[in-house]
Length: 83
Image (cartoon, rainbow, N blue to C red; front, side, top):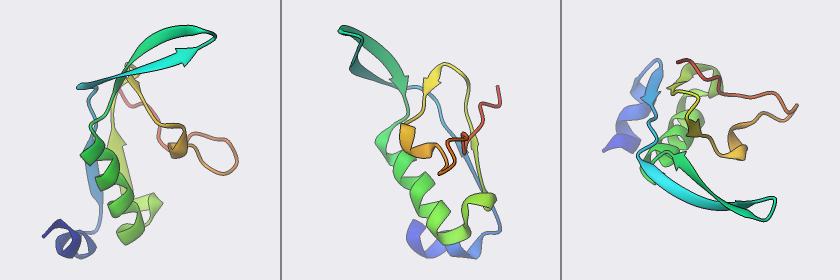
């Protein structure tokens, strides 16, 4: 149903909280990161394809680790931390 509804909207506002924990190795040490749920990442992608990146707003805070794929081609962050 969401696939049919998204193209009828003008904008998408997605709230991303760090409910999940992801373990990652950084500099040889195991680090636990607060990450978004998988379905939120899927919804960001679906809305971006349907509406365009300029019409998708992601609200999050600096405690949530965002996937590197949300960085733009130029290396600038495509999504800014708002809180």
